[in-house]
Amino acid sequence: MLQLEGAFSLVFLASDRIIVARDPNGFRPLAMGQLEMPGDKLATPRVRDLRIRPDRAVYLNDVDRGEMVIAGPEGITRER
Image (tube, rainbow, N blue to C red; front, top):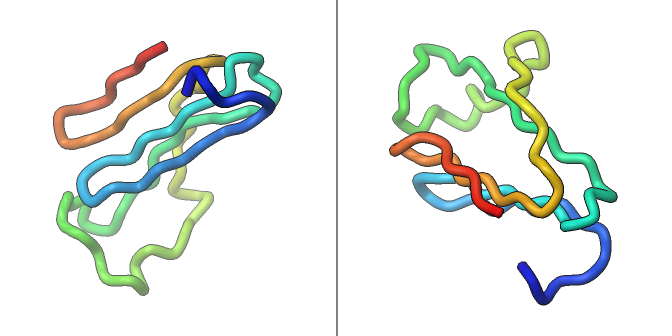
């Protein structure tokens, strides 16, 4: 991340976590939210259940400039 230059917001998806990062200058905004899933289960839902429903989204917070946030089974960790 320290070698990247310019304005960016990055999102990485893995099988059990999501990683997001924002550029050190904060040129691109990046916010975190949470979607209420049917049944609220951790198991992978069917594709047809993955429709984004803005009325079920809850704003959590912004990602600070130069910050990386990792959300996984163990919770949310934030790194600079």
